[in-house]
Image 1 (tube, helix red, strand yellow):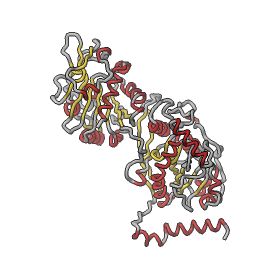
Image 2 (cartoon, helix red, strand yellow):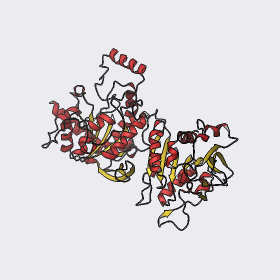
Image 3 (spheres, helix red, strand yellow):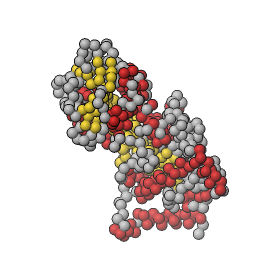
Image 4 (cartoon, one colour):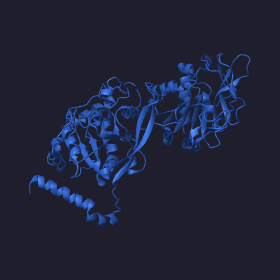
Length: 540
């Protein structure tokens, strides 16, 4: 039997086993999951809050993808790499990726394995022969065999991470030992990959190729309209390869990145000098803004999105919806410059046209809420989500208008919206009634009789060397379960608490400060106070 006939025989036999009469028998014995004709995906994408604001709503949309018109491209999941840490992460993510691939394959999706520069290893593999024997597409897109470094709309954009050093995140001694081990194994320490990791199965029905024109021909021959892309590395190969996101998008395919099935080449010592996994998040956000939407693997195999074991970042959700103090600017900058170093961060902005907070579903997995909202009734579903977060006992930090975030001065909320009239009392232990007039600078000083834990929130904060620029809030008397940290004075007015902590009746802890004027963010002491409060909040 000739080689092509053998391949056809294997493919036909495999299809009979998978979809023919044998499934009826084995389905009962092995609890076979019935294949789906289509998948309903929730795709996340980002839209600017206003033109040229450089702030984005995280939005989702539902799409149903026909499995017979869907392909999965597995990008550069090599068996080795010159970066030791990259190898560890590939080995960690591969079993989950294999589970995702297997499920999609069983439902009828086309699987394309694309381990670049490894085709010699697969020369005799049925999946490689399958790709080479696929009829060439009659119309190949221009440049389909070339890298795509940027789409036209990216020409004036700045990439969110600096990967100009190649993205190695090994420690020097660790990297040296790994290179020596590769040499001892007879491998090129700069390019040691030979094949795709064996942790990902390649079926006879699959395809193996690293050539854009071959992969495009497979997509066209199989009538593929939808492509899921997973693998590494997001900032290089996943985006730029001939079969990568940019080329697929610009040539008309409906594409989504599986965002928890990827990793970046990013060195945290390079700008913006954030956690490695935060670097990946920034690249994913860039893709959602300018390239294509994303999904997570739990939409396919259930459970929760994949997370690397060394990704121990607590998740902070920053919600901003108040026009008076421009915290959509100040808190955004604070989150990017301060929080991304140690935390997983989601930014949620109010949408004035709808009155909602798109992206608030990020609260479902959050460890801490940092809030700057003013008198905003919420759609019922969003208020339910906020109440659920509070009732879970998780920490909440509020600045400035957050103590009247969801209450109205008077009247009823618009139809379909809800208020939380006692939010200030129940969440912050506060008693906001009004504020003094603008003008006088607030003199600050620390409260007395603080415990060691309470003093930790003021560590490195020389309160008396900085000022409160916003008008002094009238918040006295606070509830008994509060503990004041900072007090403030203006001439001829009673002293008022400026910052305090509160143990809620649900068991959770809250921090609130009436500071938060945009000029407050220019003071090192205020930034240090917020950093300490976030650390206190997530501390178990």
